[in-house]
Length: 173
Image (cartoon, rainbow, N blue to C red; front, top):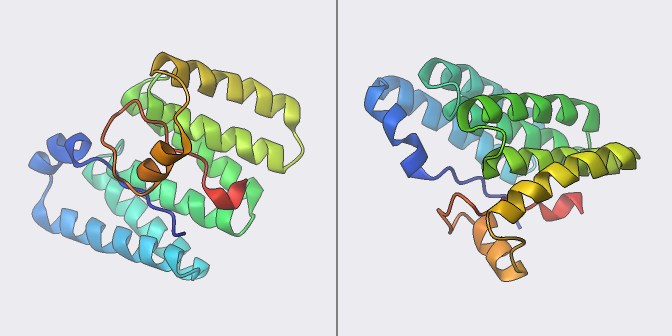
């Protein structure tokens, strides 16, 4: 199943109003290339396109456009089991999400969840438990764990509920 990284349009609306149409078009094109290459397992192409989208996204609105592109780059690393690079990208993702949304926001928590998974994949269980506890605290504040059907709908981008945490992709389990 391809990974879907749907950014709720409502989160992007304030930035879209202020951004130049040409810049948005260029970012959208680069991000689409990133997503398509990732879905087709063309990882060098995905990495290049995600990096280009990150550069464009940082000019548009660092918290949202950049965050989406950085998430694509993170998934590119994770798909290739490049855990050291993924960890660096996830930590940067945590920084940008904390700055944009706050430490207790579900999108920030989803990055914590990915970081805990990387820690487990690299044999760092104690660190994983610590980060996982932070993730669970935010998840619990939003109503607790979701059933598998809800997680699948979210993974496919169906939910716009900001309290729905994004699940760890199946390929990381």
